[in-house]
Length: 343
Ligand code: F6P
Image (cartoon, rainbow, N blue to C red; front, side, top):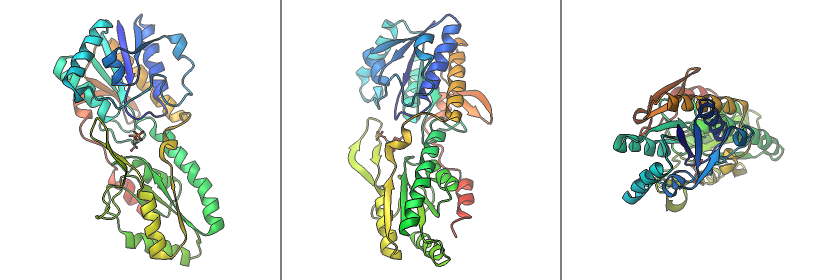
């Protein structure tokens, strides 16, 4: 059996453990694995690399993806889908494992539905916004990076009696901001799913100061809508091949508002791509490995059109069609629990 594997969309720590898991499982069963480079671009253009147990054994600790990634969408041009099908045939593939978020897995789901291509999906994203899986790998590493950053920012905020606004990624889901805020004891958190109440936030910050806490930490998710006039704050007008704008900059807006409304000196730190970089945590290495081994087994069992997933503590498989197209936004209970501390 010859299996292609690709990583698409924004990279994240944990991708290499998945690749290692798939390769080991397929090769142990006598199969062969080919890496398709730069996401769906590699699958269209046939840009490949051979993957073996030997050359993937030592990658578990590396962040990013040894296969490279891109936001290429084969469905943008009809000829690209045809080209991809040709490449699949020319390479003699029997199956294709796509590791990615909603966009990448949406393509895998469509290729299975439209062309009966033997796809298997594996969910990844620091945003933790994929349906049908409890957690995505990359998320744990990202929130640990955010927490470490806030622990450092806290000391300088305290020395200068400032408020520091920390902007996190997460697109339209507030998981990163909410869990970071909870774990780093932020004074306030703004997420896309909860209507922003600037007055209440400023009142909380002022009340804390009046009670003797002379600095503050506010976490804001890049997808939070702070004022109706500004709407979503974007870094540029560019739209990617899946129709997404590039979010970023809302933290600065929040910092300006806080300083104006409270009179407290305020700074903003945008954590940006730091959240996606570096070595994966133990949790993400273990989850990535389990999902990789699970995806390899799905291929060997010829269970196509499926996505490997984590539910509870078990690795299960679900239909790609069920897992894609609907984002898993922040569970309101998480925000309610966080908000106990926003007083
Ligand atoms: O989906 C992962 C993510 O990091 C989002 O949180 C963020 O909005 C986006 O990707 C950034 O994308 P890019 O790497 O293209 O700037």
